[in-house]
Image (cartoon, rainbow over all chains, first blue to last red; front, side):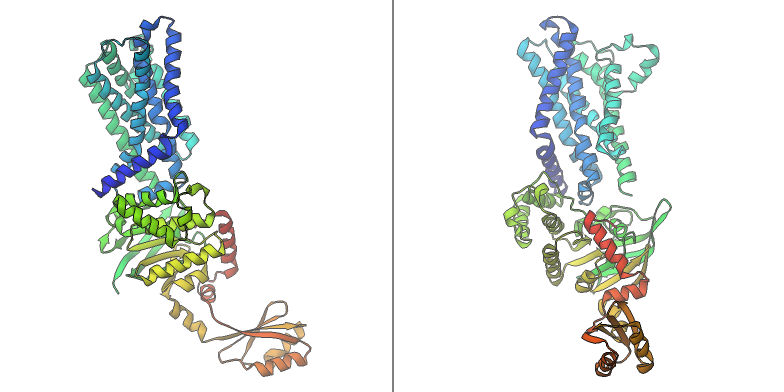
Length: 245
Length: 327
């Protein structure tokens, strides 16, 4: 019970101190808005084409929304030694890091629904498989957050965390099949695509919105889950190795 | 008194640097234990090992009877830690910072809010409690950081250079609060390079130099050998080298030195008869302004045992005070 009091308060503190600050809220809304607009204009087609860009924009919103704040909530706090205070608390490292990442997951999930609401405002959305869509968004937020965490604990400076995040995020966007179908990618790039978690999230979103998934849902979910566990375990290992000297 | 903390054979190496080499000591329940040494002696490393922020290469740590060597989490609920930096959250108010720290130790909402208010009062920060921590002065930040370490009423409070770099009034207030805590039975573990602070507050002191404990003893025992010596500082006008040269043959039981211009330091194993000395000085043209018996200090003991000049410590003190200092 005591550990859960700590968990809840770390989450609430991060939400108050970082995520619910006006600049972050506006970023969380404007960023998906800008991406939706950009892809919509790029497609050059009418409003009825909006659903086709929805999976991509949702994935981008989740990916960027979840990963962007971890450089502050983790790397910056570590540099300022406020993170030591958390490491000194009688709470397991696993639960502590889940508390530190829960805010990013919630922020990512909230960001995902901005383009959905926006699209729903302009057009009648096609029948979306919400039973697939909702868990996919959640799992994408978790995997993106743990990916951000992995980078945040691997570096010392905030700017390094942000640089490394972009180094991986942007290529991932164009290799995951969201905007360029995997079968149209050069052959040598395809193995790389299948090594990216976003590929499986994108496939699930395509399936949920338009039924055009290329892999089975269970396979996509299993691989995304495995990425979550792997990235979280690697991050914990890095914290133990590099931060608890 | 039972030992509440026992460290045996602690070793820690960072690359080529041997930060700690075979450090062993114990702290008794209710004791105010001091770790004294220059920057880089290994004080912060020791605290990090004891609190779970670092792992020893060798050795064992027991806190409150629990083996924490490989599982530091086992005893973290017993510990309060005040790091050498004021590492609270600038975007939270003083009150919210304290309440958050209570929550980290599983305290319920009512309890932690009550305790936060109580500590703000004790530390004289009640009026600033609603202000953001980022806007606090250095002294206020330090006080709130110490209050945060006390929030969950720890059995042992670790303090890493608690008064470094803050104003005199805040430092005095902090020392007073620490003395009160000690009186109330809290075990305190203090690292400092302020020798006089350690002397004033601590029951026992360990001198740590280059990762090794040179000596551990009570302040009283450390001072005893020097208390047997009698030291006198005589300030004179017109004190020349020739006058000083005349003194040893006349007073063969006394040792003379001139640590500064117009200042004579007299040392002896017996009480110094001041009359003949003053008369002789004045007969040779020196004008005696004052003569003061010097009480032996822990600084003298430290210099004698470690061979490190107190001046070097003072310089470090000033330097780290300016920076906000680590060791």
